[in-house]
Length: 413
Image (tube, rainbow, N blue to C red):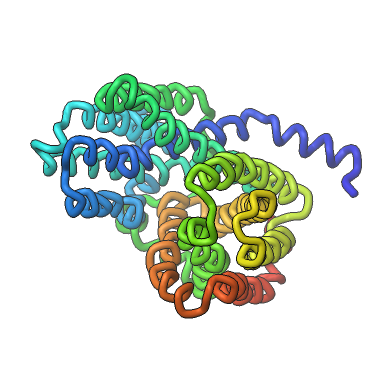
C-alpha cells in the first residue's frame, strides 16, 4: 500500500503543468487523424464520389507509417525561435492548421486529385506533429513520469479524435463540411499557443552535429544494444492479441444480435470513457510500480479481457454482459497502452528522440495493418469462441519476452 508521502508525490505529478501539456498536445495530435478518414469519406460520399475512389484515399495515410524518414531533420536542426523542439512544433502546427482549412476550398466530386493532394499535406504535417510531440513528451518528462504522461497524451488524443469525427459529422449536418474544416483548422491553430507557452525541454548533450549523424547514429546506437532485436520483436507482439481481436469485434456484435444503436451506445460512447479511465489508472499505477511490473499486470489483463469476448458467444445479445465485457476490455486496454507507450519512450536516446520514437511507433502499427488482415478468415475457420481465445493466447509470446528484459527494465523506470 502506498505511503502518504508517495500518494502526495503521485498527486503532485498528476496535476503538474507537464502533465497538462501532455494532455493538450495529445488533443491536438488526435484531431487531424479522422479529418482525412471518416469525416472526409462522409463528405466524398455526400458529394457523389464513387466508392473505389473513396477506398483509394486510405493511401493518404502513408505518412504516418513513414514518418521516421524525415524525423532526423528535427534531431539535427534547430529553428531560430522557440527552441529545438518547440520551434519545429509551432511551424508544423501552423502548416497543419492551414492545410486543414485548405481542404474547405476543395470540391470532392470535381477535383478529387486536388482533394487527395491537400489530404496528403494534412497527413504529412499531422505525422510530423506527432513525431515532434512524442519527442517533446519524452524529453520533458522524467523516466517514471513517462507512463502517466503517455496515458494523458493518449486520452487527449482520443478526445481530439472524438471532437473531429463525431463533432465534425454532427456539425456538418448544420453548417456543412466546408465550415467544419475551416473551424477545425482554426482550432488546430490554437495549438500554437500551447506550444509557445510550454517550456522547452533541456537539450541532451552530444546531439547530432551533421545530418548524416542524425540519420545513421540513431540506428547504430539502438542496434548496438544487446537486446535491440528482442525489443523490436516485443513491440510487434505485446498488443498483437487484442489488435487482431479488435479487427473483428463489430461484425461479431452484429452477428450475435446487437443493434447498431446498442453498439454505438455501449461500445463507442461508454467504451470511450472506460478507456480514458483505464489510461488514467494505468498511468498512476506505473508511477507507483514501474514499467516492468505494469507491463506484466496490464498484459495479463489485456489477454483475459480478449478471452472474455468468448463469453458473449454464450450469452448472446445481452446488454449487461456486453457492458461488462466492454468495461473490462477498455479499462485493461487503456492501462496496457499507457505502459506500452512508456516502454517505447524509455527505449529512446534523448539525442535522437524524434527518429527513434518515430521508428518504434511506426513498427507498433504493423500488427494493425498486416497481422490483423487474416482475422476474418481466422474467425470463419475457428468460430467466434475459439477465435477470441486464440487471440488471447497471442499475448503470451510478448509477455514471455518480458522475462528477458527483467534485469535492466526493472531498474530503468
